[in-house]
Structures are given as C-alpha cells and as structure tokens.
Image (tube, rainbow, N blue to C red; front, side, top):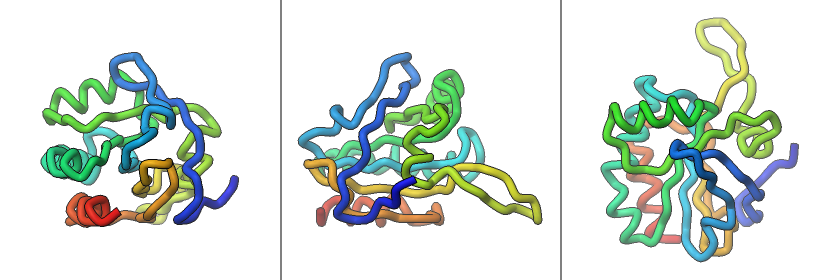
Length: 156
C-alpha cells in the first residue's frame, strides 16, 4: 500500500454505482470532487453523514464540486439507502479486494467495545480539477463535517 498525501495525484479507480453503471477517476476530470468513505449504509453515523452531504449538495454544486460517497456495501444496499433517506449524493461500491479503500488505507483495523475487526475508516478526500488531493480528513467525526468540507471546497 502506498501512502497518499495532500498534493499527490488521486489513484485511478473504477467502482460500481447503484444503477449498475460505473464511476471512474476519468469521470471527475475538470471538476473538484469530494470522495467520502463511510462504514455502512443505514447505520446512524453514516446516515447522518450522507444526509448532511445531500442537504449541502446545491452548495457544493455552486462551488463546482462533485460529491461521491463510498462504502463496501452492494449496489442493491445503496439503492435501498438512497430510497429510504432521499439521498441525492452519488454512491459507489468499493467491494473488490485491493480496491480504492485498500489502496488509500481507509479499509483497516478498527476497535469497538474491545473487539478488533476490519472495516472502513470514515475518511474524506477533496480533489482539485486535475485529480490531485487538496485535503484529507482522516478518522472523521460526523457532526459538522459536511459543512467543514464545503468551506474547504469553496476555498480550493
């Protein structure tokens, strides 16, 4: 695994979308992008985060910034998550072993109530129009996060 830092080119990727299509790094060319990694659809923190980004999507669009949420959940689970919570942010599935979350190191060892397991480490990346990493938020706390990312997108 390579460590990525601010200023680095974001790695190439291809991920499945809920509608059965794909999203790739090439889709982001020429626009800023926020890619937020979250553990699991329909869990309290992940639902709050996705709803917060959905609520601010018009503001991100004004800032010329595309939003993409990523988890290891299946396209079908993403469809249900979108429908249940009226989400308008795009979602993608990173279920492949050695996928984007593995490449970035956001899939890793977690601890909860004394139990150790592998899972998605909530993280967010802001990319510029050239696909370079402008800012990284590792180990995100959900409250106020979408607003903080929006401010950074406006300044980028």
